[in-house]
Image 1 (cartoon, rainbow, N blue to C red):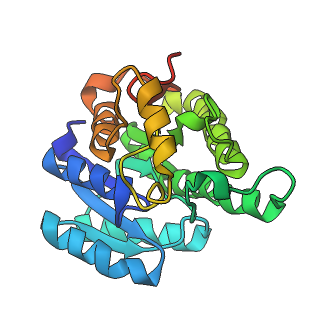
Image 2: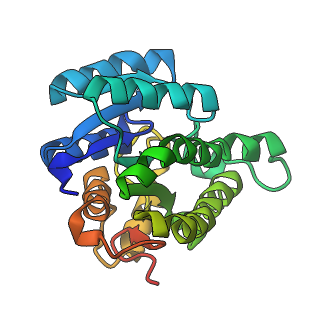
Length: 253
């Protein structure tokens, strides 16, 4: 299915990487469903929808199955056909704050549980869309990971554990959903310059990452967004169960 024929849901798309992904899909002619959860992010999401001109904004907690199913029903009524592509980008509140992170002596299970909310979201969005994907015999699921569980330059234990779980889930989903014409992949970005989550990153960390990266720079949200476009496009129709790391070459696999 051409990008211009797709209806794409980007979870957590009121700002940062999610907004960059929404802009990229809109640029290629796709219909875009913007999702946010916090009341205070509603104005940002509405401003982005106005910028794009024809985007639908739906407030929903991806960790809540009922809200997710309502989101999909609203989108299908609005566009007259079902969502064809999901980018699971929503990130529970997190700050890449380097030295201020919780270490193993103090981190709580509640911190891990909070980050695994995003994994629950992937299950909820997949289960909500699966009947439509099976009917169409087509679908694209793109999960947003992180290069940190390959190269934990700063050990954010809770965040990286959840992202590693997403990689495993991506692969098992790809195996199960492949016969239905659905591809499932994960895009793992490096430290992105700059998003709300990375604003608290100390300058020394930025400098260290840039020095160790072959491209000698940190990657922008727009560069990650373009890889999501590729995986949703017809060019990637034979690609599933794969992780693409977009970090300027810091992690080579």
